Length: 150
Image (cartoon, rainbow, N blue to C red; front, top):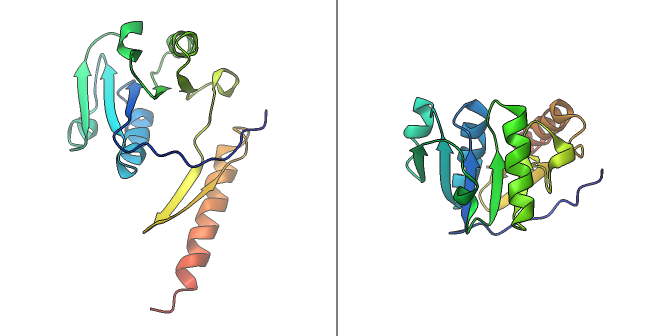
């Protein structure tokens, strides 16, 4: 698959995350940095998510009605079949979805991001090698940090 890198304006747009663990936490942090209106639903929510000031979360089982009105959805549970179901439910509602553990069910993938001020750099491997994307993002970050003339 080949994913088109784009910049999305998510300010005040409803983004739903289903899942409450470390992957959901990572997605929530990134989305908050871009001013999305994040709503997170999971049976169990890790303490770090509860401490994020910019998201609303609720401990509850997944139900397709939770997707209503979402701009995009992240299926980030630790249950692969549930993630696929969330992906299917979102696609049936014509909502863009990222199934974090299965790129073949994604409408989009999240790049490895580096942001400084108004500038953002995203690196993607089209979901084939996230570690390589992160490594290249870090090299770009280090290069830019070394080239500053403060």
